[in-house]
Length: 467
Ligand code: AMP
Ligand code: ZN
Image 1: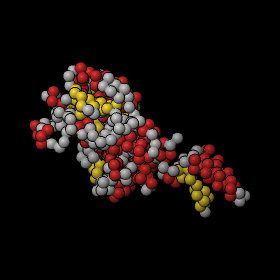
Image 2: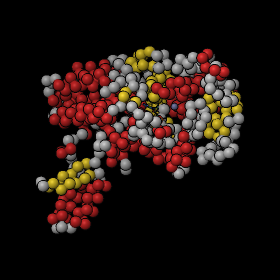
Image 3: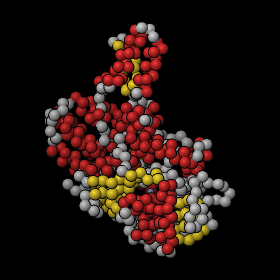
Image 4: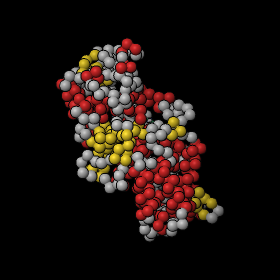
């Protein structure tokens, strides 16, 4: 079956075929690590995870690279404003390097809780300054740069095709009619290298052929994607907000340096929206995964909610829809758990399911089909074997789930529970409390019910992440 994906560059649904053999090279724009990711950001990484899982399900060998933006992303897309990381440093009183480290780890913990597969390669912008300087040097050599008092800029007027991805109307953007563009020659020009301001000591800055400063945001992705995947690879993805500026500029840089538009397919995830400004990190108060967890929501219920919509449609977030996704997931888990092992996959269903996801990752229809299959009179064993197979794409960890009352308690935990019961029988409350703390550290809580101690696990995927 042919996988079809919607390519934002050509704006068409195209048959996917790797550029080389069976190997698929993917680059996804990663987080700017100045704060926690909000659940909108996470929706984009969930879409990219489904993409990767689908490619693997189709038998391709995927190599997946994600960058960590830890320098150069300014508060304004117009190359003005502050560096988000340095700003985060001022907000928290921690160093810029510490900020980047803290939020990188928090991000990794979030994606792990959502059962998003880790990329094969993480790359940090600050670890690739030489590559970025070299990339800018080539753009300069080809005559596409100019200097202003605050940096080295890319001259977009020299590129006939500039803005094709976003179908930009460049005529309509002539400088006179637009807001102040400072020393930029064209409104669409963008910074490749920014000079450190003489008035303020930056924490992150480097020497370069042009002066001390730091790289612009767009150059990091071109430089690192090229380093790890080559000048033309299979799929580049990110959120739809990247189309008009970030990805447009990555393409411009690549066209000048390598004569390619960087990737054969450009895929963009649509937004998760809330009623209020809950998704704006700059507002300081926003919805992150931990807020959901604190309300007792299983992170995989959020994954399920995202699967219920198509990645190419905006999704309105509401607590009601999250609760209903959570109930649906529980139903599916309980059904799955009730079926016996040892069955064989149903090829007819697998074919139907594959057809849905190969139609531009239509997870909504794939799930609808899955419910139909669950309701059918096919045997439980067959259903279980079949859904186990499909879960490679859905990533709901169906096989690992056990009903709360039937959790498998590891021996070590059981031993502690028994010795706590003995301590309580001997009225040694101090020892009993100490053991309760030991259990908590292992990720278990214990309650004393009439029929004996009741042991439960604290949100498993999260406690696993924290070690
Ligand atoms: P950032 O950390 O701001 O660089 O964004 C990380 C990723 O999240 C990028 O791919 C963005 O396009 C994406 N993104 C930002 N806001 C949203 C949103 N509300 N819904 C879905 N994706 C988003
Ligand atoms: Zn990027």
